[in-house]
Length: 194
Image (cartoon, rainbow, N blue to C red; front, top):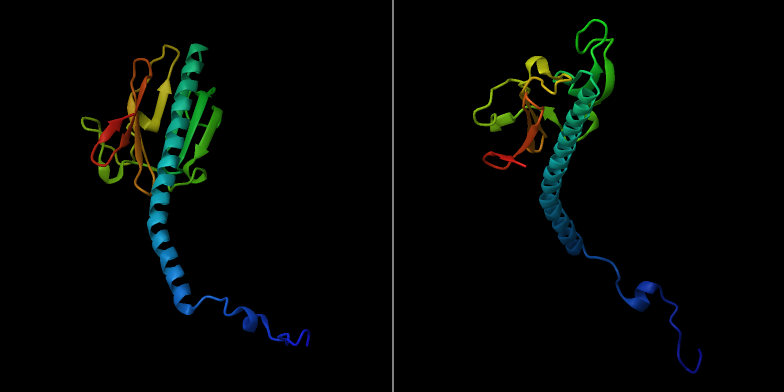
């Protein structure tokens, strides 16, 4: 005893009171976290899918620009869309056999949807094609699923539709006279030019 006062030898629980959470408090916290997750996960998924489909569209338009550069240098080019493999590739020479997408092509670059995330695929889904444009089962209206370009800056016109599993969709339409292109995105009820 110091100064006539007795020092408590008890535990922290005794000297400071209860410091834990009650079962009710834990249930409320878990419920709030579940509610926030239910709201945030679909929003994030939609945003992520939109970002993925936009990144792929930017890569395809980059290939079109690179193809135009090849034309200015006097070389044929082709962008090949492979719906079975979910692959897009840029070729700058069709080889000795004079056929595109064969072993002797000069491959410039390629990528697969599977490597880009977002559950990407070709097609327009339930949205349907752009009004007045051709209908296709695989979402690619270019003849033989390839955009072929030659040194005169002409090629075959067409549209490629891209979509994510979350519902985002983009269409890239290329004309045949100067290989100019238009990018449209699905905005709820219609295709809107960007």
